Image (cartoon, rainbow, N blue to C red; front, side, top):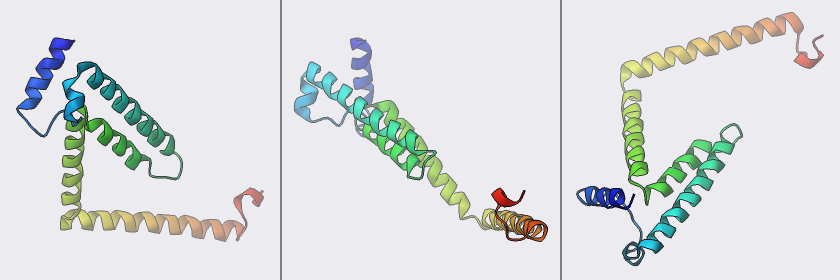
Length: 137
């Protein structure tokens, strides 16, 4: 495990943007650095767990999950790579959303969904009047 960590540290050294962002005095002491890494992992895990709890509830669940990944990204190379991949995918999606053909298609789909919803609402009002569903029986 120690040899694997040293190899990872050497591989990361080639790309200065990847790797631990711990203060130098923490990185110099192996036991302190391990405690630091465990602390970062626990804090990131707590933030991600909070985000997962907020997914079905009103709140910024995905934003909090990505914040937890950013916390992990301060220490773990795999989290930094996941964040880079996610950032690339979001940028690609934003770029494709600006494409006039995609915008036209999205506008047509949205219009169709609104028309169907308006039709269903009209049918409901014509059939039952303005009666709440729990009193329709």
